[in-house]
Amino acid sequence: MSSTPNLRAGFAGLGTMGLGMARNLAAKGFPLSLTNRTMEKAIRLASDLAGGPAPVAALPTPAAVAAASDVVVSCVSDGPDVEEVHLGRNGTIEGARPGTVVVDCSTVDPAVARRVAARLAEKGVAFLDAPVSGGQKGANEGTLSFFVGGEAAALGTARPVLEAMGRRITHLGPSGAGQLGKATNQVIVAGTLAAVSEGMAFAKAAGLPMEAIHAALTGGAANSWALEVLGKKMLDRDFKPAFAIKHQQKDLAIVLRAARANGVPLPAASLVHQLLSSLEAKGRGEEGTQALFTLYEELSR
Ligand code: NAP
Image (tube, rainbow, N blue to C red; front, side, top):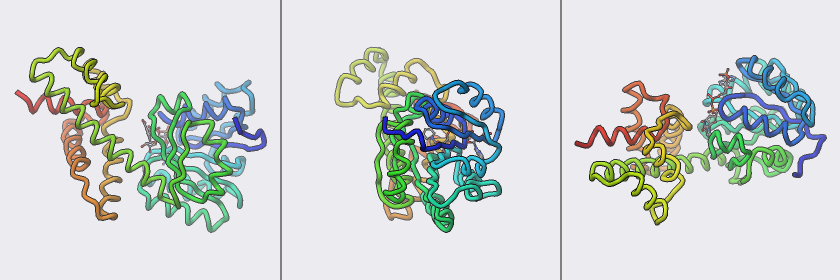
C-alpha cells in the first residue's frame, strides 16, 4: 500500500457505497473525518472504527471535513446533491485550502462535474470526478473501478486514497471525462441487462430447465457478469436491489443526455430506459434491475 500516514482523508455521504468505502480508508490507516446528511450514521461509523489504526472523527459539515483533510471524497446521490455538498452552504468549498483535492465518486452529469471543478479551481482547490463501478460488493471489498476526470497532478495526490478503495484507477482526461467513462459503462450494463432478461425469458417460455440452461450459458460465449450475477437472481426470483431500477434510470438519463450532446444514437440504452420506466410506473423502482426479467415474462404468453 502506498498510502502515506501524513495524508488525511475525509468522506461525505455514508450510504450504500460510502459506508464500505469509508471503512476501507480507515482500515488502510488514513486519519479520517466523516460527515453525512443524517449525522447519526457518521457518528455511529466513527464509534465503530474507534481503536483502529488511525483516528476517525465525525464532523458536522462537508466544510469541516474539508478543513481537516488533504483529500476529501464524496459519494452522494445526484447532481444537485453533489453541488450542495461541495458548493452549497457549509460545502467543501468553505473549508478546503489551495492544494486540497476533492474527489467525487457519485454518478452525475458530466456538466455538474465541470461546474464544480471550475468553482473549486477559483479557490485553488482541485476536483476529480471519479465515479465507480463494482457496486456495494466492490465498495465493501475495496475492489471498485474508478473512472477519473481532472488534472493528472491532483490524481497523483489522491491516488493512495483511491487505491485504498479500489483495484483499478483509470485517468480518462479532463473534468467530466470520468463521468463520460461511467456513462459508457452504463450503456454496456443496460444492453447486457436487456440481453440476459430477454434470453432467460425466452428459455423459460420455451420450457427449458432453467438451472441447466443458465449453467450451460455461463460456460460459453454468452457469459457475462450480468448473466452470472443477475441471471442467477432471475432464476432465484430474487428481485431485491443490489442496483435499484431508480438508480439505473438516473444513470440512463445522464447517458441519453450525453449521447445527444455528442450526436450519437443509443437505441438499445433508450429501449432499456423505457422498459424500466414501465416497471417504475408500476411502483417497482426500488427493486433491482434484474426485475426487468419479469416484464418480459408479462409480455410472454
Ligand atoms: P445511497 O445509498 O442513497 O446513499 C447516498 C448518500 O448520500 C447518503 O448517505 C445520503 O445521506 C447522502 N446524500 C444524498 N444527498 C445528499 C445531500 N444533498 N447532501 C448531503 N448528503 C447527501 O446511494 P448509493 O447507492 O451509495 O450511491 C451513491 C452514488 O454512487 C450515486 O451517485 C450512485 O449512482 C453511485 N453508484 C451506486 C452504486 C450502487 O450499486 N449502489 C454503484 C455505483 C455507483 P443520508 O444518509 O442522510 O440519506
